[in-house]
Image 1 (spheres, rainbow over the protein chains, first blue to last red):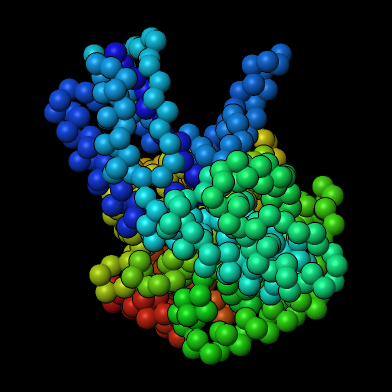
Image 2: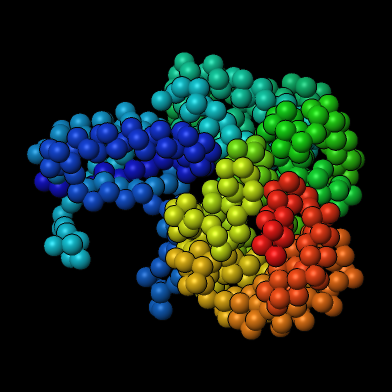
Length: 123
Length: 409
């Protein structure tokens, strides 16, 4: 089963990190990701730019409304995601725990993927 | 992670919102700052013991409010609040108090706090120092190092500035749309001043470079609260695109490296991506302003993989637009740089020659003039202009750059 691990955290806190802290976190995460890659568990990974760069298209209007900013104003923001292959929810949670030890704070939402098209540009 | 680094980052992140909300309650800058200070001290012990609260900002506001309230209760304005023992140990209480904070208030709170620092009686340097102290929470030591003055002198400067704003009429009523737009404009100018204070520093090693990041952080906070302001997007993009180039701006000796000669692989791609995304977003509004135009110019530089790939005709047009929006000899001077690339040094020289009187004390004027004269083969006149530029150079790096041009004559 494929799972999306959606990363939520306070954007304000993350952007208060120094560059060194940010780099150190990315280095720790790379170690976990390398191990996942070696075990064939890791799919696409994305870190999203800050929510200030987001634009929302509200489709419940005709024509759809374009709104500056993220879909929802929340205390913690969606900052990125991983796609992982796991045998069970337990395994997906284990992977999330490993990632969480490298990048503490905030929450991961573990969400099974229903339909998955691999990147068609990279067969 | 509830280690010190996390707590410090959370306190830094929460500070502008917390202090500005406390200022709304107490209407006194000193009380608001002290309240935040006390709440931060309590956070250090409480968060270490119990883990971070769900909403650190709300926690700090409520605990700070409680801490300061005793001192002002005599005035009879405030009612009791639950004490922080109950708040920090009970997540339901925290959720409740977070809900009681109207997030819409934050917008005007933070704008007010930044706006107070922009008091028109304060000279620019004091506005910046005050904002860095109160809003960002930098220590007096950090600020004094950024301004290359002694800590005592900076302490005095900030105290004086604080006294002045304390005596001023602080607008606590909710601003109307016109006031809000005007304040946003004034605050944006101040943020760009902070940025430029850092940008003029000599390289990453210079502590002042951190001011650029602080300006970007505050602008991002403001843009998060005012999501649909194209000029704020423009300012944010402009700062990001300029900041992205900083690692390539100086050589190992601290000498300036001009845009044409910079190693573009050292440009920060992530900042450029964010800057370009914001320029795109701003353009969609079709309400151009000076920051958006400057950001668009910076974006054209950022998009060029080599100096030769730069879209100079478009940059020339954008500077012409900026000249109309914000006529100034410095803008014309910048336009002349683009004009020299598009139409040649003679056109550019004709463009800047009328500026001689106004820019007679301006380093860049003589730097560019010398460069254009050099390109035209007018060596003697070029030498005179370069000599003048060296005399006006604000840093050894600037002077060294001109000397290297002189050597090529």
